[in-house]
Length: 432
Picture 1 (tube, rainbow, N blue to C red):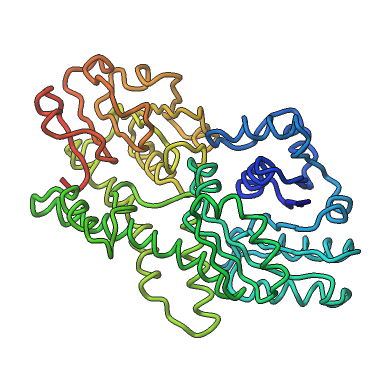
Picture 2: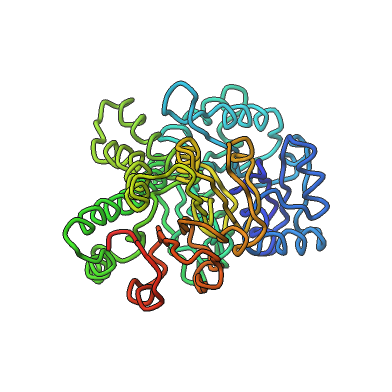
């Protein structure tokens, strides 16, 4: 099939590369000329395992192409995926749909034959209705169909999630569009993906509801971890015991610094705003947001306690600063709160992350990026495992640190307390 992907951000680039790898002719469009130039030369703007190889492979076979010419791309394609950003507005928590609506107007100008226009961007309920209104002002409804097809890609696992999805959600009441999209996704359906056709509004809400629920699971177990620390219970045992119940499941019951990234923070806030719009108080999600925002304060309080309330001049190392492993995404990472706070308190901070130095910390006093784990950990009073990269899962800390009496604060519970005790390392985890 002939596909146009508008937006070469995280969702657009992954979707475009994967659709082309399934044998479709894909044109990825972006207004940024430098980005298109880089993509044509195999330079990928985001860190995502396997994506670079997939892009280069399909660009060479001409199944995948990149352009700034939206007009031509739309006219050549049968299916158009809108994959532009929907950030939170500056003055409120509602999603900013400026890019979605601007693109819709551009698409409208170039409809010459029947087009299926699909929103893959995360958008609030009724966005599809608004897009339909925008396009139908000048184009007959017989010439287009607006469909919601939310993505469920995890950063760091996006290629696998696209190729082996749990479900494919298609929001449309148009039988023709549903049939074409089911055919498009047939290679994934044949591998076991569940194909679910529902209304457009329901599909839009499924995306927000899914992210809000997963954020709730993360926040819930983090609060239970706080309780575990007070009553001498291992939160890992609680997570396992809960997860064995099929109604609950074990996924996302992992305690840590709190959720971050490009999806959960903005989507939880946006669904609360949607609730307000329809006079519905989504109180559970509101409290999830509040609890997650408070998470860094709780962990920083523990850091202070570990250091006997003497942070000034202490040498602290952060292993990992991204919000999760296998991504270079710093958005809403708890390290953005922790590192500046500790710096203001007079700590001397080193950090190492497999995805390199971060611009967010360049202007912060006494914060230094190190090119290796060993150089970051050397002579530190406190080593904090902030992100669960595989690089940090089998370390010999005695060899890494030249300081005898250092402390390890494992915010991801990677290591076993008994093993650390045996190695005579002062160790603290979360919820245990």
